[in-house]
Length: 131
Image 1 (cartoon, rainbow, N blue to C red):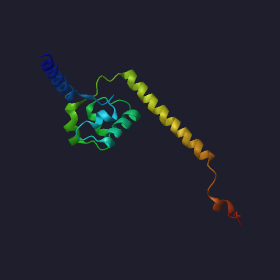
Image 2 (cartoon, rainbow, N blue to C red; image 1 turned 120 degrees about the horizontal axis):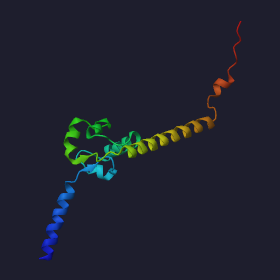
Image 3 (cartoon, helix red, strand yellow; image 1 turned 90 degrees about the horizontal axis):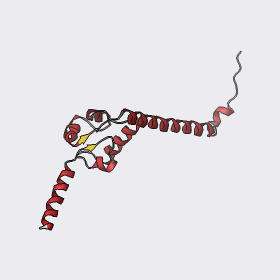
């Protein structure tokens, strides 16, 4: 009898877990990949968009991610949620993304400033004098 109760509870738990909505603001790539029509490339795009732009305020904002259109959104709409978008969390997430972008830009500028001149032809050209 205990085994039967355990089996029923296990099946019930698995059924509920299968129908749980995925929060697109907190989901990992693997969790997003489990959605119908979302593969590893689109899952990566969703995570990248979320990191750069901050959390999604509505499910419809998912259409701003490259590769996700109306048809795909209609297919997964019942399986996803944005949860409670906290303004403080959103601000912190956006600030972090902006700081990361700024750091990358500074590194790129430093790297290009340290790079030696590669245009040797321009250095050897004679200077033309005005007549």
